[in-house]
Structures are given as C-alpha cells and as structure tokens.
Length: 429
Ligand code: PMP
Image (cartoon, rainbow, N blue to C red; front, side):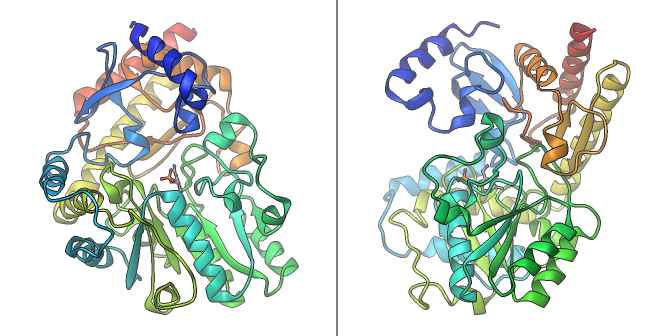
C-alpha cells in the first residue's frame, strides 16, 4: 500500500493543527507511522486519499453500527438541511427522537440532548452532584468518559496510549473529588465509600469497558455496584456512550438487567453526527434547568441535522428484530476465526468480546481491569496494527481500543480479516 497523499496531507495539517489532528488518538502516536486520511466511506469500507480500501473496524469509533453512509441517515440529513441547519429554537424532531429513546431504553423518563459523549458525562455528574448535594465521584481506572477535567484521572483510550493519564491543566482541586477504583473490584469500591461517608455523589462506569480494550463486567459486579449505591445514597451512572443502542436496544441496562440512575449516550445515537445525551427518571431530570437548579445548555444542542440522523438510526435499530443477533453472530465468527489462527502460532493473546465489541490483547491470562490490560505486549500490537493496515484492514491505532463490528460487514469481509491475521502470524514466525 502507498500512503503518499496521506503523508503529504499529514505534513500540511501539522503546520496548522496541533499534531495534525483534532482528536489525539488519530495521530498514530502509539503505533508510529502516518495516519491515513479518510476520503470517503460506504458500508463496511473506508477509502483513503491514496485510493486504498480498508475493511473498517473502527467505524468512527462506534457510531456506524449499520455501516458508513447508511442510506436512511444520509437521506434524512439531506432533506433536513434544505429547511435550515440550526434554529436555536425547539423543534418537533427533538421530541420525536426523545420519545423513541425513552421507549427503547429501560428506566428513563426524560432525555436531554447535547453535542458529544464528553458533554453528556460532564453534565451527568453535575446533575448527580446537584441532586445529591455531594461533591465526590468514583470512576474506574482505564475507563474513559470524555475529556472534561473531572474524568482525566487515569483515563483509558488516548490517555492510556500516551501514558499521561493525569493531564496538566487539570487542577488538584478537581482531582481530589475524583476517586479511583479498579474495574471489576467491588471490595475496592466498598472501601472508598467507607472512607468517604456521605460525600460521594455518583459512581460512573462504562458497563462494558471499551477504552482499555474490551473488558466485560464480571458476573455480579454491576449489580453489586447497584446495591452499594442503593444503601449509600449514591447515584449509579452508566456511561453507555459505546454500549448504548449497540449491545441491545436498551444498551447494557437491558443486557445485564441492572438499572442505572443516569445513563449517558453518544456515538450510535447520532448516526455519525455530533450528538450526545443523558437520561434519567423524572425525579432526577426535573432537577435540570429550566425546571430545576442545575444549569446545562447548548447553542447547537438538539441540532436538526443531528436529530434527523439520530432518529433515522434509532428507528432502524428499533424495527430490525434480528439486528443484535446478526451482530453477535458476525462478531462470534470473527472471534472464532482469529482464535483458530492465533492458536496455531506461538503468539500469546486473549480475546475479550461482548456483543459487537471485541478486542485482542497480546498477553496470556484474563484481562479484567486496567492493570491486566496494560500488560499486553505493545510491540506485538504495533506489528499487528501495521500488518493489518497494509493488508487493508483498519483497526484502532492503539492497543487500548475496542473493535466495533458493523452490520455492513459480510462474511467475506470477515474471512478476509481472518486471513490477514493468519498472514500476520506468518510474518511474526
Ligand atoms: N464515554 C465513553 C465510554 C467513550 O468511549 C467516549 C469516547 N470514545 C466518550 C465518553 C466521549 O465521547 P466524545 O468523544 O463524543 O466526547
């Protein structure tokens, strides 16, 4: 593969954009080499500026559950754009998508739309703090909840790649209110609660972690958190930015039959446009401005193009009875195929998977938290990443990311991917 035009574009971009990118992990810093510049995408494929085609396992980091340039989404956006791109006034479509989301997701009465997953999580903790009158939150090492200050404490994803989880610019004052626990470790959470009696407003968690590779919650872990929250007046926040509308219609709450108090969304809910949302029962949501005292706002929140894209997406997901079954089958097929190939090599690995989220860690043994995730062999990952890229398979340029399986993938695409992994094992032998 040639990457000449991408290289030239990257050079040019670096002159005027810090690191040449508008979101850190895109810069390939963790794996080396030049980021490929996307030109277009359709279905399961993304095409770069040099004309290379890739089978895409990043899918814009999750939103493209149904594939790129999904017909109903594109149509809805085109039609909406003709009648104005933003009003800063309420529109009917905001209620339409809110009604559908409230119908699909368990245990929520109201939802507020924002512009990103970051905003959703940031607003959710402000709401939790306002509602409980407490300041502290518990988050888990390796979980990423966007780049707002309170969460840039041992964050996963780009933070993990760069090894600078505590960003300069985040004040000590902010950091002291964010308590850290190990994922899948209930005992740890219990201790933090005991040491901070009546001070913790919320526990925020990715119910399936996706920012240190894919890490499923252990049996009873989410329910254990629910019970701890119940007995200590703490709100449980599920950050379903990745898992929402992906693992089930009702996300992880539905999959694991555990209710959260506040749920955050992003990615799929916007169909690829900048959308985030947070939702809860009336009692909590009525605490938000203009009904209640907790302030929250946005010039472009509920933007008509974004709402049109999101609505087209949710309508399709809601009406396609077999979607989650198909996604699960495809992901399982890939899981088995890669397992068979890697088992024949002497490469140490662990694959984690939940529904259509899957990741390959290059280390043996169970990967269940950040400490076990960082044990993966990064040199093997780098070689894997570049081998796959050169074979036209686009996976995330970091060992700490999940692969997102899209419904647009065919079994031929999956076979091509498995064959590419086999070629990688030969390169490594
Ligand atoms: N929460 C989770 C679980 C995420 O994975 C992300 C982004 N990857 C965010 C929050 C932040 O979303 P955004 O990038 O849209 O701000």
